[in-house]
Image (cartoon, rainbow, N blue to C red; front, top):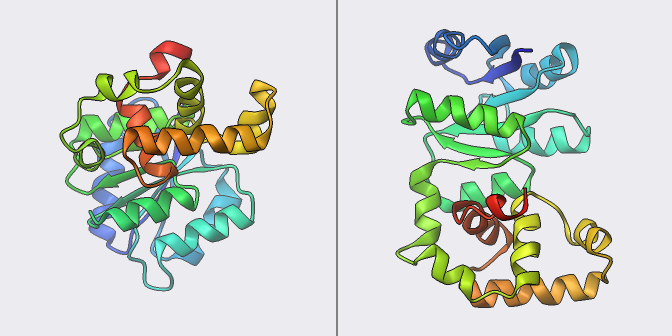
Length: 211
């Protein structure tokens, strides 16, 4: 079954180019295009799309505001930001607001295809250059060796987008215990927040250990 995709960008040439590029893949179907945030919100309700490619710069509201509204409406659609903005603050904010991916517009076609398929499958995908910034020059495997088995398990769940309450329920431990583990993970990995920890977990291929 084809992955149903919506495009939201204020440049029609960009949308048309993306549409042609995406529909070269047999498992992709572009089911709508939006020039504004409001148009996109209407299309999400009308089309039952699986994935949205969303620019940050829209005429009526920012893509980040669109993310907020989609979350408030509890829309069952996964959002990938596709933008020129490589500032880490944008990445942080987008993922905190519920984006499942963050890509720059210079991304290669094959990486874009992979991002869409990964996000549809429930994973998170961040542009390789941005993800590498999180790692800095640190050796990923050595960083994970600092964690206990329980901390690695919790980091994996964080990288899958689970909140502390969900993790506590799955592991049958208290919320406070989860918070303590997460705090230790931040300290041991040298990261500042949940998003950076999640990205480090993804880049370290934790999924191979637990999926």
